[in-house]
Image (cartoon, rainbow, N blue to C red; front, side, top):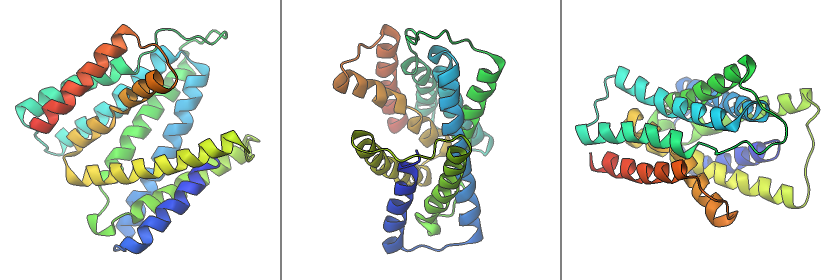
Length: 248
C-alpha cells in the first residue's frame, strides 16, 4: 500500500487532467471522505484478517460491504424491479459463500475476539460507506473526486506506516507486484465510479461487492487452489444474480 497508493494517485491524476471536469467544494468533500473510508476499510480489514479467523472475518465483512449500499439505496427511494430485487438477495448470499474459507491454515490459533469483531464490522462499514460517498459525487466533476479521495487515503496510509515503522520501499518482485496492483487499483476505482453514476446504488453496490468471486476464480486458475463446495455454490449464485440484476 505504501507503494501502490501513491502510484495510483499519480495515475488517477494523469487520467483526470485530459478529461477535465468541474472541481467544486462538493466534489472535494465527497471524494476526500470516500478516500478516508477506503483507507480505514483496508487498514481494519487486514488487521482483522491478521488477528482473527478468516472464515468468520471475510464473510461478515463481505455481507456488510454488499448490504449497506443496498439498504441506503432503498432508504433513498430506489426501487429495483422484482427480478432485480431477487437478484440482489441472491447476490448477498453469493457474497457470503464465495468469501468463505474452509479452514484457517495459520499455525497460530485465531479467535474472534471483541477487538477482531470491531475491526471486522468497522472495515465492512467503511467499505460500504466508500460506495455510498462515491455515489454522491457530482457527475460534472468527472474523475477528480477519485483524485481527492486517493490524496486523503495516501496520507492516511503513509502516516500509519510511519507510526508503525513500516515506511519502507520494496524492491524486485514485491515492487513490480505493487506497481501492478496500483494499475489494477486505478482501473477498479474508475470503473466503480462510472458504475455508481450509471445505475442505482442498491444495484451497482451489490454487483461491485461480488469481487470475491473473481478473487476465488483467479486463485483457482493462477494459484491452482482448490475451491470448496460452498464457494462453488456461491460462484454459480453470483453468476445467476448478475444475470437477474441485468435483466431486471
